[in-house]
Image (cartoon, rainbow, N blue to C red; front, side, top):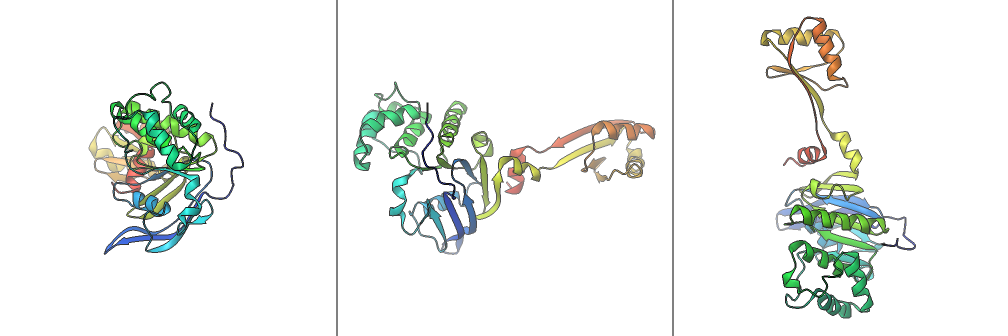
Length: 307
């Protein structure tokens, strides 16, 4: 069973202020300001090309920002040596020796990181590869390779884990495996920042979301808060198209605001379909259509990012 990390800090794990990165005339990250709290799983979401990977690379000190600043675990990103020993990262698909076993690959990485061989067995257990550790890396499925890459990122027992598109290219079973692993890691008290361009892939694992579009922040907060941006509409259509205006007048008289939408009316205020049906029937209008359309999280995400 995974144990919680001791002495978890209550200050933000990551603080970003006005972070900007330009490549010539192209702005990849544009004045991004956001804090990532300590503990739990935070999804960094946005369409392809939104600036997610560039943001992650700046946080890890791999590229320098054009302007702005950020801190990771209390240290500025201009001094990555101060925080990188406490950070694990999987930025691209893991690259290891295909003919070596998973265990031997991890032992090689452990020696480079100054970590004992005993930690190798621990991380293999954490990611669910115990029993397959002697299999060659080249024989692993894509999902197993991703899990082994996460195991490598966990070798130093990091406080912060940063994963860039860890479910990219996985089949549904592999996505579920990675999702469950992220949930377990977050429950330990670690901070897990995971990027993706698909909300449905990681929404079950995340406590909070950071959504960016064209390098700019468009949402930050708990997943439930994102639903406050959801559209909730009821569509009504009379059996006779000639009754459309009459239906609108009837609704208005009952205190219900509606708007035409082709040969239907749309009601966006807080009403129940059954109540609207009674109002129409009370004036002798028979409805051929009456249904409610509510956006789910993915609908809201796609609308906010204009994809």
